[in-house]
Image 1: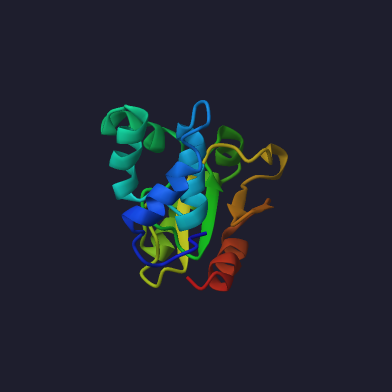
Image 2: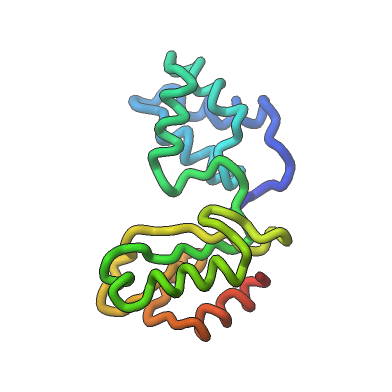
Length: 158
């Protein structure tokens, strides 16, 4: 979850990066630290990391966009990750996902206008026997149906 709501300054970004420049293979630790502090990877950090590590901005952005848990913008106060794997699809996961997105008026990775909830796809939560499944913040929930998902969304403030 985002720790701050303002746009991070270059000095704040540089302080975090400085903590990791001495490490072997510092890119992922830098990205994790930025996300832990700000809740996302600030755009300004991409160029600063590229310069520090003698990489191109495209290379850094490629790593950020490759890993699904890195965000390029702040998430909502709550994050609901809906399983998109085959086992959950086989027991109604696709319909549940479509209904949830339609109810919220969102696409994947989007956040409700009030900032309460972000919806993301995830590809297997290890709950294959209890699908459809989702992760609400850090809690895995199985055997979801429309009514249970509606309660989750309401509790999240969506």
